[in-house]
Length: 252
Image 1: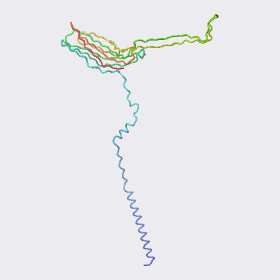
Image 2 (image 1 turned 180 degrees about the vertical axis):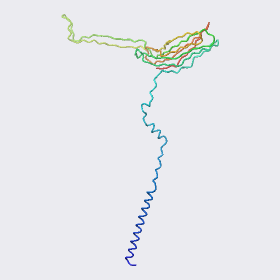
Image 3 (image 1 turned 180 degrees about the horizontal axis):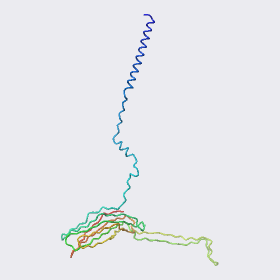
Image 4 (image 1 turned 90 degrees about the vertical axis):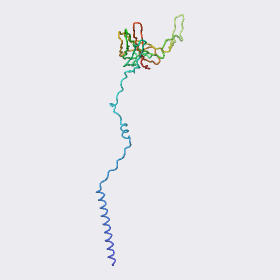
């Protein structure tokens, strides 16, 4: 075969291969474009992440509830109950008690003041000729001021001054030193009973209700404590029976 024909045949095969590869590339690209893209898999959220994000968000100021005002509410203790020899039962109790510390009107650091309240009841069974119900408060003070003394002295000093026949010559200086000392004599604290009311009744029961009653104690320089008390007295022709109620002690 002549050389020119061999070269022509090789050239034709090269062109055919090039065209084939080109068509194959176009077909592959077309198939890639025709296939829809798949969405990426969702990223898993760790447990508790949503709650952590919600907790990190600041709470609006309007959503924060204002603290409730202090009413001084006190939990009442168990009633005082007594069974007397003749078979009667005496019961004294309290409810809705309040003990709110307030600033004393004297503005003194050694004074304590409270606004108190509550409902106190007393009842007895059997045939009686009446009785009485007494309500008050016990105030304890750890340390009291017994005596307060003010010790002082005043002096006079004249410097470079002369007193002669011609009179008093005072070209110098004068000084009036004043010294003072306050002595406070504390003493062990005491308990003070403050009677609020005493009610006599003719039947078998009595009640006393207090609302915003002001009580105070002076000369108290230590811690103070407060508790309510109620005394029920039941009377017959020949006997008196007494039972007491003591409220919870509150330290201030």
